[in-house]
Length: 202
Ligand SMILES: [Zn+2]
Image (cartoon, rainbow, N blue to C red; front, side, top):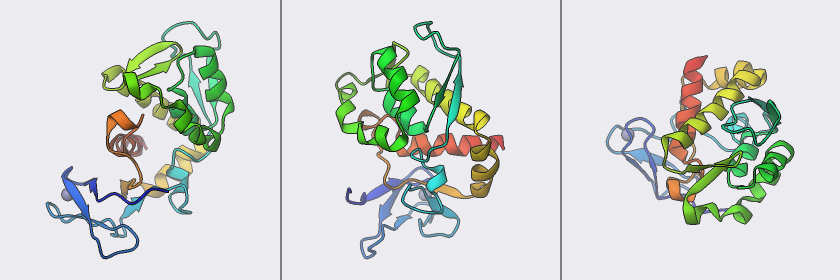
């Protein structure tokens, strides 16, 4: 799909881990701390990979959001969302009713394929939830994402009891993820942070 990046943020020290050019499969090394992405303790999350796919936002782990809507535009006390991707892509839809339909009925793959169609948010760097605006760089936005991942953890027993424990203690990376907040609703570092946070809750 896209060319491998020339560098990733080192998941150990936060400096830059550069891509080693000689390898066909992208391989990254951090000169600062010695991190190497081919280490057996490192998991590069990809939906195409049979080992790490269940950690991907594209995996159809259904979860339930209980009434933390900031306003009462949507009267339902809880909504069931088919995947994290459905939630994340849905944040780009301003109209609360259309967003609700999208978030509850569109699968991860369908939501993902809508990504380019839902690019308007980049102009204003504003996302939406239940009709409320969220600046991409605000703490409120980060809190909203955190609540969604907490809901996934708390309401999907397979994700919590089978998937996460399998990867506990591993260093997670997501080399196909984007690094710039202005270009994605969830950066590689934000994704890693959420999963590492949930691992600690086990
Ligand atoms: Zn490092």
